[in-house]
Image (tube, rainbow, N blue to C red; front, side):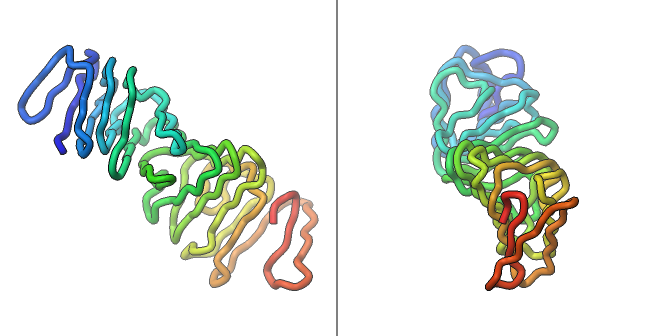
Length: 220
């Protein structure tokens, strides 16, 4: 696959392999990479493997259930193939969304992860429109907010490599979450770590049979 660099100012213009073009609406390379620069665009269709928005100046929303991308710069049909990778601009407020998906965060790289066959980097926020599960792996994290719309989602720290502190009520600053979180009723820790639940004036109900398990304020 080749790398196609779109002109930042003129739609349907770009270059690749030493060739420069204008007024070509479509790009078709199922293993290719398309670099959108700050504002590249196509008025036709795009089929590629990797989309590079690392300099793009608009916020993106990637729907990992459908493959749709808001503000993608592609007027026609956008098709991702193979690894289905979308690399965003770390300076933008990009969001991954879906419905009832498990989002697996990348180890050691904030705001990167995968879900339903799609992979991304520099997407700060995750919003699931159904029952979402966030898998933090050993060291995954986001610099934005996490949301499960149905309020029955799961935060899974079961493989986390260090102690986790979870703030009841979804306040900013729980482990691995710089921003807030909402809609998560189940928080799963790694029993090998010394994890902590924290709150302010809450009632904590401990499980009658299992150590280190309980509930408070709708979270368990």
